[in-house]
Image (cartoon, rainbow, N blue to C red):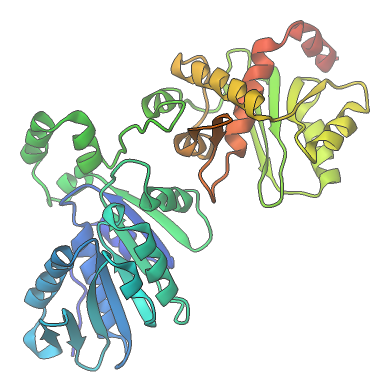
Length: 397
């Protein structure tokens, strides 16, 4: 049998046919994400071995059956055998592709799966994803996770942000309507009609892969985007340092006179090396340092020279609330700037919730908020600093 991979446009090809174990694709509706995933999965099954199982998991059976029907219709009859009852396709001399529903996650445990697709992932239950991941353990199989954007409060959005930050084994891809138009997959007139008919938030999610704002973000998605600016080349006048704890990062952010980010440091080092790096980077500028827990002796060590200006701030529920509300005002008023990347991504996933003890501000479980804390500390240091010109003069001597 001779196999020729179907033609795909570049973004489509890169999203699915890559070496990452986890490839997460946030895409516009009708942009070819399902087609690209079908090509990837069929290729896996054709060159798999007899007895190897592959899964296509969708939110409900009716959606899983769409992919089943499309694959069955597109393949030559002599290379597969379809079973309508169990919704599966067996490839002659290859693997067996099962089409599953994520409605009951308990039904997804137990099998060894050699590759999987999670379709319409923003609508699939998180417990179903956990089950799918468990089936890939013994085989170390790859997975392609695809879907439209649907808000921020779902596991697909959270996992996509981790992939976007280049966690090991992950790749992130975004395909929007403009990409599909350029490739001839969608008509520009149809997209403009959708823009005219649909509510803006719905259109942006479905065609631009941009999540609508959730009430749980204290800064506001549009405000975060509006403050993204290139890294300033000016000298810093104030720093914020958030210190690493266990698997977190030590992050330092320097702001210039106009409150634009001009320095960004992020590392994981032993404490003595951390102290030396903070001293070297900060110089004679004022700095506000997180002194919570292990940070207390670090701040004392930084202050021991007496020639540099470091202040500590302990994070408590009230102090962190005040700190983050100050940063929120700065972002929403456009008084602060930062480059696109780790800082903006952490701001986007940051959240708050009301508890019996007040308001709790933090990143979702499994994510970092070190850059957010460093930015908030830098802003507080910059805003409250007095006599800054004196320190700049000393630093220049």
